Image: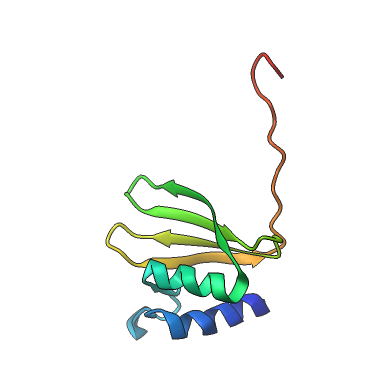
Amino acid sequence: MWKTLSLIVVMAGAVTVASPANAGSPVCGDRAKVIDSLSAKYSEEPIAVGVTSNGGVIEVLKAPDGQTWTILFTYPSGPSCLVASGEAWQELEEKIKGPAA
């Protein structure tokens, strides 16, 4: 919970926040500023990326030690928004599939 609260405070100073009419909306802003802020505050870097059916980009960022992580969505129109964040990221072991398994 504290990570989320401090992340919101950091991001509010670094990015443009949604208008008051959209109170409760996620924190959004310029992608470069969001990435720089997450890197400076939590040492988080992108580890996975994908393109959604509407042309948006979703990214997972995590700290090298896995203690913190963030999911970021960038709309085709430009703004990037924090979707989720948390602690204790864990990689799953890949399973071999097919005849070689």
